[in-house]
Length: 416
Image (cartoon, rainbow, N blue to C red; front, side):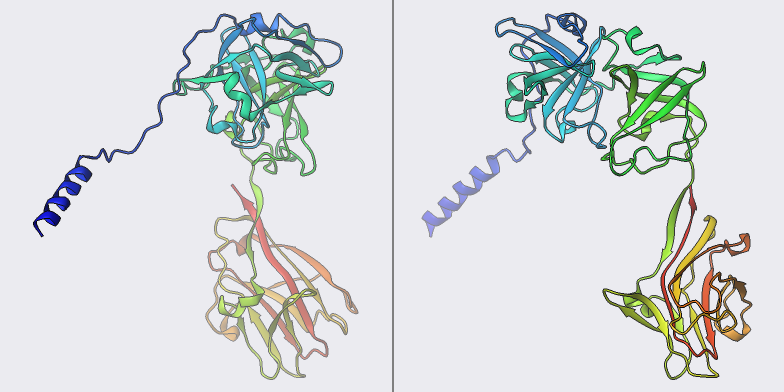
């Protein structure tokens, strides 16, 4: 027992003496210095009429240094970073889809250029490797040979203010790939178009106060691609690029836009889970065959097969439309034996008493005409009086010889 006690005491002493502080990654440090400015590097290559390049010989010992100005966190930049110093900017192609983890905006990066290729893509200067007659990204597993982060991020480079847009050839090559700020700019399609269409990267014209213009280029993979372009006049900060003779700007994310008016966007504020509708507040009345739900591969919605001389009511749960502008109700309905507006009706109320007969209901006109036997899509603009925190829908069928099917019930509205 004495030996066991001594052994346990020794183990406890060892454990107590261990350093329990969590490991902290060392600050990245480059043991060297830059001997070439970005402008001096760019001067080693002449932009050609088509994509062209110049190899940087091994042993030339060219080292540049700059601060990162791009971020792929929002998906609008893909497999490259931009760095800039006080003389110019350069785009560096890297085969990695999540560069922002290592090369965040404001990070100082040294680049050993020996063995790389300095070229251009549609006249935009780039640094990378050359293969198959075009610039290729540096393989991610080889970046340790060329790129060296140093210290902690220092904040984004100060943008160059622009109040006018010269022609593409009038802008010096050193200014491309740099962070710029467009002063008093306006989106021509503000409030109408989204940043990018779903199928491909999209260009949108930006007008400056003096009438000159520039193109905003946005990837369809950007997280904000489907958001609406803002309205009004403001400032736009992004990376200045070009595509042949077209001057472009690329933003990291919508935070790069200042003083614009963000348009209201139409959103779905209410929809129905038909599989569990009656457990989520929907109310049904009627004997025999009252309102029911059906969910299968062919139909998801409500339906009712009424008996003669019987009223069947279907009432929604309370819906908060108090802060929704321009609410619209849409749904699809079908009556196999024909729609009859005198027996199949839709109403709303903002003051449900708990009793159908004592509640004041406002009728909503349905557009389907008599004899309709196919599915009809309704779109009804709700009046200002419907904008209440206690809005409810009601579908009412009475003394009808036909079943009635309802699906795709939803309410959309403009939300700031």
